[in-house]
Length: 325
Image (tube, rainbow, N blue to C red; front, side, top):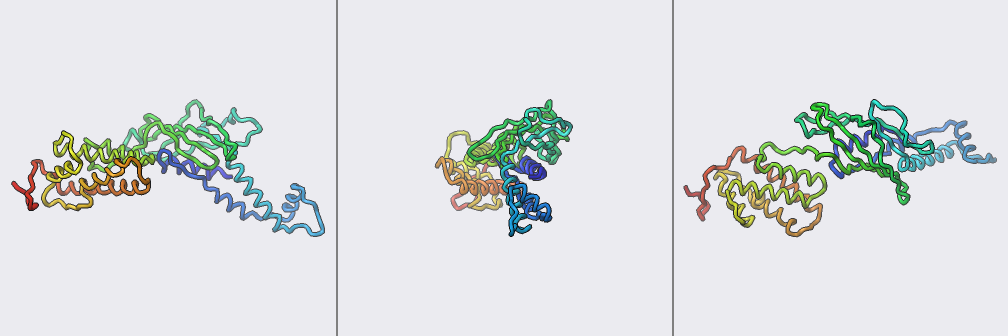
């Protein structure tokens, strides 16, 4: 197994996956390499003898020996990829890992640089380099006899090269060739549309963070809370009220020429988000589709408000739908 696939896997994980996100190291390039190995005849015969092959009147062909060799190499690669110890170290540190004995099989890698958003500056995906914490990159090593997989927990400290402020520390769990982010020292920085009101922005952010972490019901709750607090601020309604009444009250503040779409009104978005909350538990795929659609409808609503701003003075609507002044 080559180190290139492992390094690429860690970069893919840390740059593109959210908390509790995971990837599997792609072993296909190594398998393809093994599959293309062609053994010369003398090497093939030596390989046969090394595994106890006995010469006979009809010895196996070089092609047959090569196939056997490839299969054994693939089996060995799969076994080693699950059991080998991995060790990561800072780029300026090259001493051998003292915690490993001569009996252990291990691979040593230099911690790769990554490009991620910074929580402390506005640089666009600045490079983050690993930092040396007294060379303390020794992983927690566990072993699962049941699955024949090495389980390790790694701690990776990274520093933004744009602002060089507080480092972000990732906790990565490795089980064989599966890698998962199981923790980080602060939540990832999320992008929020600029026209989302600053008064309720933090709840919109929490909704995104919860969705990124796979907490769909929590994300739906935060998004509905964002809507409620926003509509209450606009309408001035503080007392307990039903969601549809709140939505109708908010509707009164929209200009007459606002492009109304019944299925995407804030009242309708509120009502749809309320369904899984009241149910307490639903189908994750269905709820996530609802969540994504609600995010889209809310963003589109605030885009329209850029061109059709809310009037300051409340208007009352006549029964025929025409506004009174």
